[in-house]
Length: 119
Image (cartoon, rainbow, N blue to C red):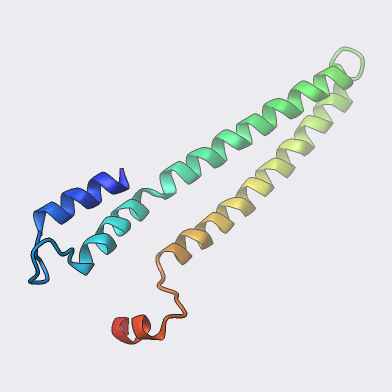
């Protein structure tokens, strides 16, 4: 997808810097920005799917080991506690993902020529 969108942008502005066939610098930056805008959706979706898998796995293991007919209160207690724990971890992970997405929007490099130009 990245290569195709970059190709489309390049074809639209061939020779943008005055030389035939050259790629204007803003094109790759613009394409990457568009891709970053879509980044939260798959991250959030993956986190939710992973949380669901964890919950289902815990429930299956607890059902096999404790069994609801012999010790229903213990089974409920374990399931409730693990749900709280998994929800807390998912919330912590969401915060971490937000920080990562913020970092994706910042420019960081050790190339001082680039930073002099950008600033």
